Image (cartoon, rainbow, N blue to C red; front, side):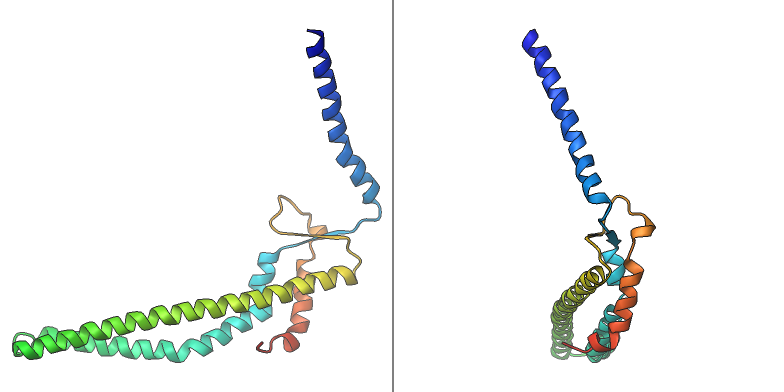
Length: 183
């Protein structure tokens, strides 16, 4: 029994010591430590470089989208003509038109899949490029303003007093002309 009571006492002392260590460490670092918080999702969503990137990608892929719309209209017209004239066509002509419709459907589907894959790859590359730019802007802001630690989102709680997200967004907006150029 005595070993168990002593073990509990020792365990209690150990737990108390473990609880006090973080408080001591924070007390030592507290006075001169400058900590900030940044909402990375908001930076990515609101950075002008990201908006410009989205617009550039939409412009780049707009001609392909227009071609798909034209192909869809041509396919719809072919299907309508097939449905309307199928009964009066010869079997050979009807089968040939059906094959042509099927081939066009496959071509459109394949083209859309290829375009989607290329778009996704380009969008990912742009996000990576802008992520690095945003991360560099956070680090530059932190260094310029004497921060010791910047905590990115998500966090359980961060006081608005230490939130530097708006300041970093302002820095990104000022850097937009130089950073907005294509890689």
